[in-house]
Image (cartoon, rainbow, N blue to C red; front, side):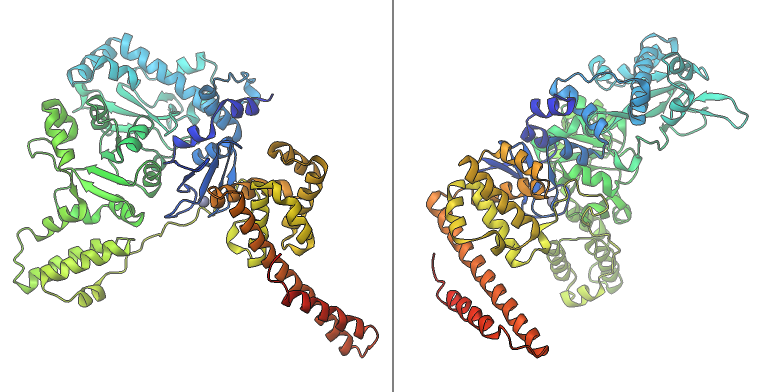
Length: 601
Ligand SMILES: [Zn+2]
């Protein structure tokens, strides 16, 4: 067994997908909202029996490996690397040469993280930094859990260490851990700073953020926090600090708390708000919000945004509204400057603030109105302008209409006038992820003709109820179907069933692969289509459905044949030939009679 097969065999596809999506049992299968395209009702189906998934909206599908690969945006080897520990499979340690470059960078970062922890525990300054963290209220456990470390003051301590661990200079630079000055000397990026690892949602360490040594906060050049640069493994706009630790709780509790600073996030987790992530001080990007949306559609923001202007200008809020996410705002008691401070002083205050968090629009409306006199025209105009600027950002029409109405009532201005004044907001509406190639060559079902669609349904039904294959064959020939691969599939199904008299899914799949005529590529989709739409049908209902589809396909087929004879007659007439005309007319007459008498099977 190859490592990939072994990993697949040991993982349950439903459990793995459950870590990314809200999965709901439907019959013997599971459904979810597809993460690869935007949809409101689930067309993403998972079959635990067959250990496959397929989306009927965008046409993507595959096995557990392809799902994780697509979801995490990884190469195949890196997907195995990620899943191996979960499956309890030990991957053969490949020679450095054949190991993926990404793998080397990740190893380099892990190695650095362990050494940073070592400095925090054993370096003289490091130990003072640890004392500082403890004094700030972090527990020993938290420091260990988050793998918080310290970067030595020396210029090349980390570089030298990593070289001693057989990482090349190139790899260390590429991992963003060291650089070269203009004068050509090497230097560590994170010197004399407290180091926090940044991990992907999957838990893979991909970068660091480093806080200045608090003893030198006033004298040091560079920011209070500095981050790893953009590297091959780290794209700042696509990572949310603490999401790896928070994702489970976000899904369970149904909302995510978003704070600004890493220290805020860590403090939140330590106090049991384990559904907290940090935006790391910048506006939330669309990519970050999409990450969150996998786990919940509800955000509670604890940002320092007291003024309406700040809210209106916030790009993260704009993007979240465009993604139709629900946003609430945490208002901390005014004596605290951030969640960290609040939690240290009185965790209950924070808890209350979360419970009392306000829907963003309500909060915004209040801010906009405060200090305004709504009887004065100039104030009305100002309030309308600010409100419309926000309302325009909603992608959801219902929200839009609701707020236009409310604003109209409050201002005593007609809704129509307000609607006409809505600014046009440049919103990149969520698009299908069309840029990435689909993993399976299955075409989306969107562009199918009615006949192809029916052919698909027939095959799906027959896969679900193989007992009716003989029944189907007695009424419908392969050529009565439409669509090349569907016809090939039907032929194979008939041959296979005649030979074995049973339909074992896995061996039929292998059989199709041997035929190499493209029909193996659609079996998963067809099987899941049957499971999705007909899971509750008993044998009688299935037979009724099959009969209905057979009849309609037969009609299509007869019409197609009639049309082709008519074409031949026209061609013959145009060429001035009369030979065989009677026979063609006879055929048409026959077919038409068949068509007219086709009411039941
Ligand atoms: Zn989809």
